[in-house]
Image 1 (cartoon, rainbow, N blue to C red):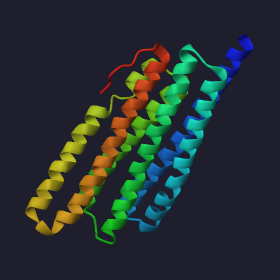
Image 2 (image 1 turned 90 degrees about the horizontal axis):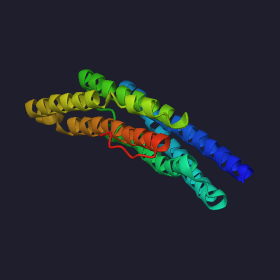
Image 3 (image 1 turned 60 degrees about the horizontal axis):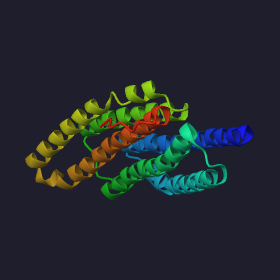
Image 4 (image 1 turned 90 degrees about the vertical axis):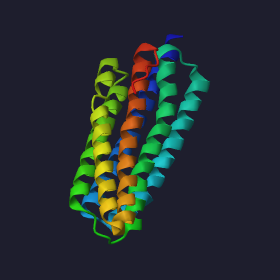
Length: 221
Protein backbone atom coordinates (compact mmCIF):
# COMPACT_ATOMS: atom_id res chain seq x y z
CA UNK A 1 0.00 0.00 0.00
CA UNK A 2 2.81 2.42 0.91
CA UNK A 3 4.51 1.67 -2.42
CA UNK A 4 1.25 2.52 -4.20
CA UNK A 5 1.08 5.81 -2.30
CA UNK A 6 4.71 6.58 -3.10
CA UNK A 7 4.05 5.97 -6.80
CA UNK A 8 1.08 8.35 -6.70
CA UNK A 9 3.25 10.97 -5.00
CA UNK A 10 5.97 10.50 -7.60
CA UNK A 11 3.47 10.88 -10.41
CA UNK A 12 2.12 14.02 -8.75
CA UNK A 13 5.63 15.50 -8.68
CA UNK A 14 6.13 14.56 -12.34
CA UNK A 15 2.87 16.22 -13.36
CA UNK A 16 3.67 19.37 -11.42
CA UNK A 17 7.08 19.49 -13.11
CA UNK A 18 5.43 19.05 -16.51
CA UNK A 19 3.02 21.85 -15.68
CA UNK A 20 6.01 24.00 -14.76
CA UNK A 21 7.56 23.28 -18.16
CA UNK A 22 4.29 24.18 -19.89
CA UNK A 23 4.26 27.36 -17.84
CA UNK A 24 7.77 28.22 -19.02
CA UNK A 25 6.68 27.83 -22.65
CA UNK A 26 3.75 30.14 -22.03
CA UNK A 27 5.90 32.69 -20.20
CA UNK A 28 8.38 32.67 -23.09
CA UNK A 29 5.54 33.27 -25.56
CA UNK A 30 4.25 36.18 -23.49
CA UNK A 31 7.69 37.78 -23.19
CA UNK A 32 8.19 37.39 -26.94
CA UNK A 33 4.82 39.04 -27.55
CA UNK A 34 5.95 42.06 -25.51
CA UNK A 35 9.15 42.23 -27.55
CA UNK A 36 7.06 41.92 -30.68
CA UNK A 37 4.93 44.87 -29.54
CA UNK A 38 7.78 47.14 -28.47
CA UNK A 39 9.93 46.42 -31.52
CA UNK A 40 7.05 46.06 -33.98
CA UNK A 41 8.65 42.82 -35.14
CA UNK A 42 6.23 41.16 -37.54
CA UNK A 43 8.60 38.27 -38.24
CA UNK A 44 8.63 37.44 -34.53
CA UNK A 45 4.83 37.65 -34.55
CA UNK A 46 4.75 34.80 -37.05
CA UNK A 47 7.11 32.73 -34.89
CA UNK A 48 4.90 33.21 -31.81
CA UNK A 49 1.81 32.05 -33.70
CA UNK A 50 3.63 29.03 -35.09
CA UNK A 51 5.02 28.06 -31.65
CA UNK A 52 1.54 28.10 -30.11
CA UNK A 53 0.96 24.61 -31.56
CA UNK A 54 3.65 23.23 -29.23
CA UNK A 55 1.88 24.68 -26.19
CA UNK A 56 -1.38 23.09 -27.32
CA UNK A 57 0.33 19.72 -27.78
CA UNK A 58 2.00 19.88 -24.35
CA UNK A 59 -1.38 20.60 -22.77
CA UNK A 60 -2.96 17.54 -24.41
CA UNK A 61 -0.09 15.28 -23.33
CA UNK A 62 -0.23 16.49 -19.73
CA UNK A 63 -3.99 16.05 -19.51
CA UNK A 64 -3.70 12.49 -20.84
CA UNK A 65 -0.96 11.62 -18.37
CA UNK A 66 -3.02 12.98 -15.48
CA UNK A 67 -5.99 10.87 -16.54
CA UNK A 68 -3.80 7.76 -16.63
CA UNK A 69 -2.52 8.50 -13.12
CA UNK A 70 -6.02 9.04 -11.76
CA UNK A 71 -7.19 5.74 -13.24
CA UNK A 72 -4.14 3.64 -12.37
CA UNK A 73 -3.17 4.92 -8.93
CA UNK A 74 -6.41 6.36 -7.52
CA UNK A 75 -4.58 9.07 -5.54
CA UNK A 76 -6.20 10.63 -2.48
CA UNK A 77 -5.92 13.80 -0.42
CA UNK A 78 -3.37 16.38 -1.53
CA UNK A 79 -2.12 14.09 -4.33
CA UNK A 80 -5.61 13.88 -5.83
CA UNK A 81 -6.11 17.62 -5.50
CA UNK A 82 -2.73 18.36 -7.11
CA UNK A 83 -3.22 16.04 -10.07
CA UNK A 84 -6.75 17.33 -10.69
CA UNK A 85 -5.43 20.88 -10.46
CA UNK A 86 -2.70 20.06 -13.00
CA UNK A 87 -5.39 19.05 -15.48
CA UNK A 88 -7.29 22.28 -14.90
CA UNK A 89 -4.22 24.47 -15.07
CA UNK A 90 -2.98 22.85 -18.27
CA UNK A 91 -6.10 24.24 -19.91
CA UNK A 92 -5.62 27.62 -18.21
CA UNK A 93 -2.04 27.83 -19.44
CA UNK A 94 -3.02 26.93 -22.98
CA UNK A 95 -5.51 29.81 -22.95
CA UNK A 96 -2.87 32.18 -21.58
CA UNK A 97 -0.59 31.07 -24.41
CA UNK A 98 -3.40 31.95 -26.79
CA UNK A 99 -3.26 35.53 -25.50
CA UNK A 100 0.36 35.80 -26.64
CA UNK A 101 -0.58 34.43 -30.05
CA UNK A 102 -3.57 36.79 -30.20
CA UNK A 103 -1.31 39.79 -29.58
CA UNK A 104 0.92 38.57 -32.41
CA UNK A 105 -2.08 38.24 -34.75
CA UNK A 106 -3.30 41.73 -33.87
CA UNK A 107 0.13 43.14 -34.67
CA UNK A 108 0.04 41.34 -38.00
CA UNK A 109 -3.31 43.00 -38.69
CA UNK A 110 -1.82 46.37 -37.83
CA UNK A 111 0.95 45.66 -40.31
CA UNK A 112 3.50 48.41 -40.73
CA UNK A 113 1.22 51.04 -39.16
CA UNK A 114 3.30 52.94 -36.57
CA UNK A 115 2.09 52.53 -33.00
CA UNK A 116 2.25 55.49 -30.57
CA UNK A 117 5.25 55.03 -28.32
CA UNK A 118 3.53 56.33 -25.20
CA UNK A 119 0.62 53.94 -25.50
CA UNK A 120 2.93 51.02 -26.24
CA UNK A 121 5.02 51.85 -23.17
CA UNK A 122 1.90 51.94 -20.97
CA UNK A 123 0.65 48.61 -22.36
CA UNK A 124 4.09 47.08 -21.84
CA UNK A 125 3.90 48.01 -18.16
CA UNK A 126 0.56 46.17 -17.84
CA UNK A 127 2.02 43.19 -19.71
CA UNK A 128 5.17 42.94 -17.61
CA UNK A 129 3.24 43.11 -14.35
CA UNK A 130 0.81 40.44 -15.56
CA UNK A 131 3.65 38.15 -16.67
CA UNK A 132 5.44 38.61 -13.34
CA UNK A 133 2.22 37.79 -11.50
CA UNK A 134 1.75 34.63 -13.55
CA UNK A 135 5.31 33.56 -12.79
CA UNK A 136 4.80 34.02 -9.07
CA UNK A 137 1.53 32.06 -9.03
CA UNK A 138 3.11 29.23 -11.02
CA UNK A 139 6.03 29.09 -8.58
CA UNK A 140 3.56 28.81 -5.70
CA UNK A 141 1.78 25.92 -7.41
CA UNK A 142 4.74 23.94 -8.71
CA UNK A 143 6.56 24.19 -5.39
CA UNK A 144 3.95 21.79 -4.04
CA UNK A 145 1.13 24.15 -3.23
CA UNK A 146 2.34 26.99 -1.01
CA UNK A 147 -0.76 28.72 0.34
CA UNK A 148 1.02 31.79 1.71
CA UNK A 149 3.00 32.37 -1.48
CA UNK A 150 -0.10 31.80 -3.59
CA UNK A 151 -2.10 34.42 -1.71
CA UNK A 152 0.80 36.90 -1.86
CA UNK A 153 1.33 36.32 -5.59
CA UNK A 154 -1.85 38.12 -6.62
CA UNK A 155 -0.98 41.41 -4.91
CA UNK A 156 -0.39 43.05 -8.31
CA UNK A 157 -3.86 42.41 -9.70
CA UNK A 158 -5.56 45.62 -8.54
CA UNK A 159 -2.67 47.70 -9.90
CA UNK A 160 -2.85 45.85 -13.22
CA UNK A 161 -6.58 46.57 -13.44
CA UNK A 162 -6.03 50.27 -12.68
CA UNK A 163 -3.25 50.55 -15.24
CA UNK A 164 -5.38 48.85 -17.87
CA UNK A 165 -8.20 51.32 -17.18
CA UNK A 166 -5.77 54.21 -17.56
CA UNK A 167 -4.58 52.83 -20.91
CA UNK A 168 -8.17 52.42 -22.10
CA UNK A 169 -9.03 56.02 -21.14
CA UNK A 170 -5.91 57.26 -22.90
CA UNK A 171 -6.64 55.34 -26.10
CA UNK A 172 -10.32 56.36 -26.17
CA UNK A 173 -9.27 59.99 -25.79
CA UNK A 174 -6.83 59.64 -28.68
CA UNK A 175 -9.49 57.97 -30.81
CA UNK A 176 -11.96 60.75 -30.00
CA UNK A 177 -9.45 63.42 -30.99
CA UNK A 178 -8.41 61.73 -34.24
CA UNK A 179 -10.88 59.56 -36.15
CA UNK A 180 -8.01 58.27 -38.28
CA UNK A 181 -6.57 56.61 -35.19
CA UNK A 182 -9.70 54.51 -34.59
CA UNK A 183 -8.44 51.28 -36.15
CA UNK A 184 -5.00 51.42 -34.55
CA UNK A 185 -6.56 52.40 -31.23
CA UNK A 186 -8.90 49.43 -31.40
CA UNK A 187 -5.96 47.09 -31.99
CA UNK A 188 -4.20 48.51 -28.93
CA UNK A 189 -7.34 48.12 -26.82
CA UNK A 190 -7.47 44.44 -27.79
CA UNK A 191 -3.80 44.01 -26.90
CA UNK A 192 -4.01 45.56 -23.43
CA UNK A 193 -7.12 43.48 -22.70
CA UNK A 194 -5.23 40.30 -23.59
CA UNK A 195 -2.53 41.15 -21.06
CA UNK A 196 -5.08 42.01 -18.36
CA UNK A 197 -6.65 38.58 -18.94
CA UNK A 198 -3.27 36.99 -18.22
CA UNK A 199 -3.50 38.44 -14.72
CA UNK A 200 -7.09 37.22 -14.33
CA UNK A 201 -6.10 33.67 -15.19
CA UNK A 202 -3.01 33.88 -13.00
CA UNK A 203 -5.44 34.36 -10.12
CA UNK A 204 -6.97 30.99 -11.05
CA UNK A 205 -3.50 29.43 -10.75
CA UNK A 206 -3.14 30.94 -7.27
CA UNK A 207 -6.54 29.59 -6.26
CA UNK A 208 -5.52 26.08 -7.32
CA UNK A 209 -2.31 26.36 -5.30
CA UNK A 210 -4.32 27.27 -2.21
CA UNK A 211 -6.71 24.40 -2.93
CA UNK A 212 -3.88 21.86 -3.13
CA UNK A 213 -2.35 23.10 0.11
CA UNK A 214 -5.50 23.48 2.19
CA UNK A 215 -8.36 21.63 0.50
CA UNK A 216 -10.30 24.91 0.39
CA UNK A 217 -11.28 26.71 -2.79
CA UNK A 218 -10.87 30.45 -2.18
CA UNK A 219 -12.18 33.28 -4.32
CA UNK A 220 -9.09 35.45 -4.74
CA UNK A 221 -10.63 37.77 -7.35
